[in-house]
Image 1 (cartoon, rainbow, N blue to C red):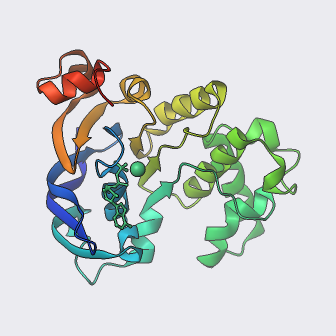
Image 2 (image 1 turned 135 degrees about the vertical axis):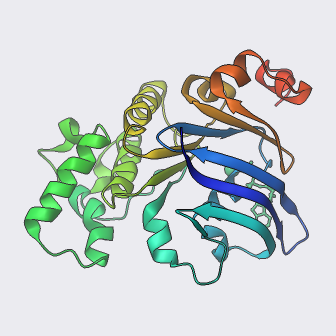
Length: 252
Ligand SMILES: Nc1ncnc2c1ncn2[C@@H]1O[C@H](COP(=O)(O)OP(=O)(O)O)[C@@H](O)[C@H]1O
Ligand SMILES: [Mg+2]
């Protein structure tokens, strides 16, 4: 196993004085599903946004520590943010396709990067839709508006949009919280396939999903990382009492 992103002693405070991450150190493992879970308000979304510098858009007062990605601390001011966000893509909890066709949604980022070849764009669209397990459902209506497909399909389209940019890491923040069980299962199955080519970071929408999907799992509680271990260990034999209580449903 190799480390894809190493978070070292990261402490982050918002301008209103809320300390959302307190001395977090965690390794994101390459070609695995890395699950960050725990009750709401624990700092999971803040950590994800730190990993591709989306927090730059929020009111952050201090961020100290380091986040090493491809040998470089991405918190340094000279980081190429556009390149970082292409390599470390993000999928949010509510599917939010652009008000464009299915095809245009997928090539939007590629066009911005300057890709003009129709053959390349067509090929990327098919590849991304196949990886997102959506191709068979939409191949004959790529020019329909994205709003015409179901919520579950829209979320897979949002994943395809990220995949089309050929990222190294894909972060998903509660991607199935608005979806039915069938759509949820499709996405969980897809992540299990995608990990052979990408590194996945998933904030699950409940403990059951965490246990089903995690190769590695970190339990976050009140800005702190309580416990971090391979999923099989953490859910079967948690070492810390808070983790035990949470995974057995005693609080949450
Ligand atoms: N943009 C923000 N500005 C100020 N405080 C925030 C912001 N985003 C999150 N917080 C606070 O940081 C803490 C952690 O939130 P968050 O990272 O969203 O946790 P989680 O994703 O685990 O629910 C909470 O107390 C939340 O209110
Ligand atoms: Mg969150």
